[in-house]
Length: 250
Image (cartoon, rainbow, N blue to C red; front, side):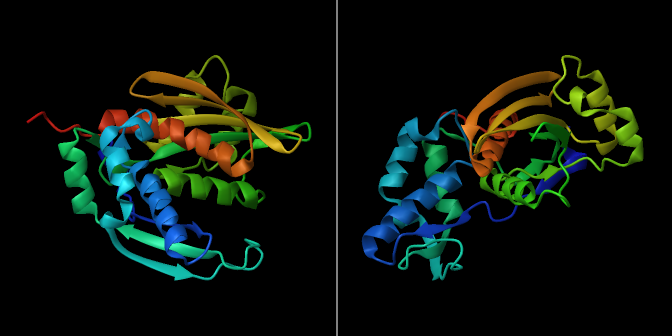
């Protein structure tokens, strides 16, 4: 079903985040956070923190580290002087073996692309997401896609599309035109989202069309990066449940 638009997502088992310092305690904490982030984009579970085998590996997160490396953080990104960026790569084979024994479903690195229609509602103006004019959104979406390991593409919004679809149809009650316009991209999954600026946060609404079904959800008012991750997390839940492989009981 997804062969035409499936891609290999590289680097699922490596992650970058901020450690408060290079001390052993801060490193241990950062490695635990890093492993949680990695498991969150490869396992099939509603809430991985409640899975016993996940709790088990997190308690000994350092045993699964293949390598790690510190680097300096750009001065404008973080204020704490001792903080460092840490890149951690985990042992994929070792983790997969433990997860299989723990009977947890796993989603491989071959993943279908999702077409995302996003409408931005700000200052009384509602418009389609435009990467050239919205760099903050572009970086937030790229980060959310990377965090969940979800390959995403966006509509071209060429003249033909602008004539065929309006912003009001993206989360309208009738999705037939949206899906008809999306057909040219030949992807198995289509996500429609609208984010609305409320004071200093973003309210989000989402609809996910896949396998002839629709899943809808909305997010709390969140900072932009968190709002985009709310959308990607919902998409991951649907797709990982469909494509993830659960090991057969021994």
